[in-house]
Length: 160
Ligand code: IPD
Ligand code: CA
Image 1 (cartoon, rainbow, N blue to C red):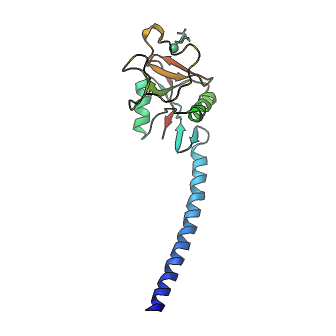
Image 2: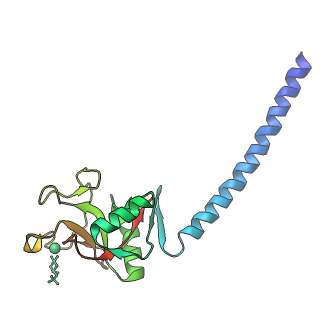
Image 3: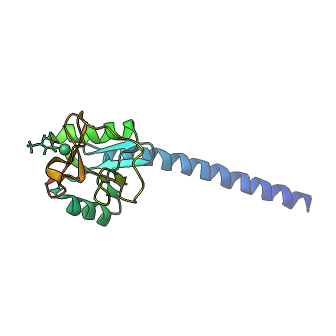
């Protein structure tokens, strides 16, 4: 009885050690794949991955594309996330639409899930709802935000 208990423990120890090795291998392989998929069009911030495909379209079209891919239109919630999006904008030298708008209530900017925004990076004198027709938000090549007509075509950046 005592002996079989000991060999059981040794068996489990060997299994744990095997699993530890496999986990280390998986972690190292995963870290390499993260490098690969984010080159050169993606950025990682914490748990989020921001990625462009190079596609350009109006707000609804960008929103649909991201959602179809299993993500959503990039929605920066802090300066680090905005910097990641800004880097992609700078790489393409093309502004992007983000997942923030005031379509529902003029002047109250919300994420796609309806939550009020917790972070913003407006250009001075923005948002100005120019011509009463600007409910979407673009990130300029400076990284600053401007409200803009949702019908304009902009570069896509999704978050996953
Ligand atoms: C406009 C201006 C304005 C900004 C608007 C833009 P446009 O550009 O840059 O400052 O608030 O969103 O549409 O129409 O003069 O080329
Ligand atoms: Ca504006």
